[in-house]
Amino acid sequence: MDFEFALWQLFYLFTAPQKVYRNFHYRKQTKSQFARDDPAFLVLLGGCLCISSVGFAIILGLGFWQFIRFLLYVIFVDCIGAGLLVATFFWYVTNRYFRVRSGENQDVEWGYTFDVHLNAFFPPLIILHGCQLFIYNALISNDWFISRFLGNTFWLIAVTYYVYITFLGYSSLPILQRTHLTLIPVPFVILIYVITLVTGWNISKTVMEFYRQRVV
Image (cartoon, rainbow, N blue to C red):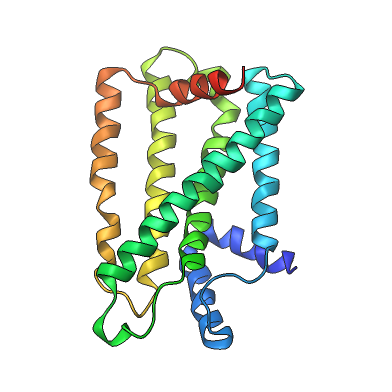
């Protein structure tokens, strides 16, 4: 397993995600597939999930077995379960509606759509399960407007990042067209963000309470 290269990918998913997808294109030329064939990235992502879950356990005051239940929920529901649904959706939609005529003898691999999800999942993981935790108890968990603003802004950045990296994943494939349509959720995300600020809904507090209910 090439952990050095996997770390390079994790770094550039934050700073220049286009470079990550150029490598996917190179893999197609050399190995006849877009999807990853090295599990190192998945191993490192799993490590990040474990570390961030420790932070959540501290914030939520979880015991050992509650922490284990929370970790399993994050891995198998938030990451893998959601990924299976998202990957299958995009696999069907891209092959059914986005392929160019000249690419009819090629298709988008399901494994690649799952890789796109994992790529897009990593930055929100660090933003929501990492950066946010440092100020959650001090600021975000309160009922102030600034608390709601900070918490919901974290979610706005994370979801927008997920959509953008997903867009890059499919726009990098030469056999697809109209991939800009994957950016459609962004205006709705911004609208929901504004509505939550106006109505007083602190998304971060709601999610924390949801997680607490899952494991307690």
